[in-house]
Structures are given as structure tokens and as C-alpha cells.
Image 1 (spheres, rainbow, N blue to C red):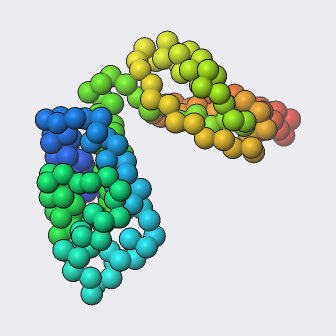
Image 2 (image 1 turned 90 degrees about the vertical axis):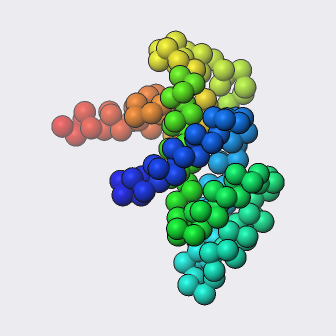
Length: 177
């Protein structure tokens, strides 16, 4: 996958330079939406079809995105389609968001909880983690019943797993050793 990241990097950096000149938050939302559309299996199949022209692929992609595309965004999509890189949008978006976070001094925090969390609970977890990391965190929350209880938080390359499942796995490893 490092190869895809290498290919996606220049596109993400170019898009980030364009976004800095405008509204970074609006571009961030648009890039996320475009990545979701690009990850769709039907679009991937269309992109792999040699009988579909690059212009038609860009047109179909633009129609699939709900947010109206600016001239810059249309040119970006056309460039990706012309170079056969439209399916790299999820990797481009990932790197774009990393550049955005670096500029803002923030990071993404992916929280997986065994149960639905209220907004107040999410704020409590985020405020505690922000003190630990010394920067602003952008949370995304997911529910996974297999955790049994507790939460698992991923910030960058650090993982905090306080779930019951993790504790049971640690206990099992200790008893099996």
C-alpha cells in the first residue's frame, strides 16, 4: 500500500495548496465526500472499464457527488480521471486530512465504543485525550458490540484500548504463558 500512498501524495499536496487559498473546512468536507464516492464498487468497476472514456468517467463521478463542484474541483477530478487515478481518492483524502491536521495542530481520534456514546461522553473522552496529546482532536465515533464494554481510541499511530475484550485477551495471554 505504500506505493498507492506515494502516488497519492503529489495530488494531495496540490489539492491542499488550492484549498489553503480558499476555505479549508469546505474543501475538507468535499474531499471526504469525493473519497466516499470514489470508494464505491460500481465507480471502481466503471473506472476499470476500458470502453469508458476519461471524460465520461469524470462526468459520471461529478454527477455522483452531491456537493456542487467548483471549477477547481472539476479540474482536479478531470486530471485524476485523465491520469487513471480517480480510484486513489480515498488515499488522497487521507493524506489531505493529514496535511490539514498538521497545519491546524490537530489530529484525528477514532473512538470505538461498545455502546452508543452521548455527546457529553465523547466530549469528556476528547478533553482528556487533548490534555494528554497537547493538541486539538477531531473525533469520529463508531459502535462495536464485540468490545463487550469500554472504548478503544486510535490517535495517529497510538492505540488506547480499555475495552473488556482487550483485558480478556491480556488475561488469556497471561494464563497461557
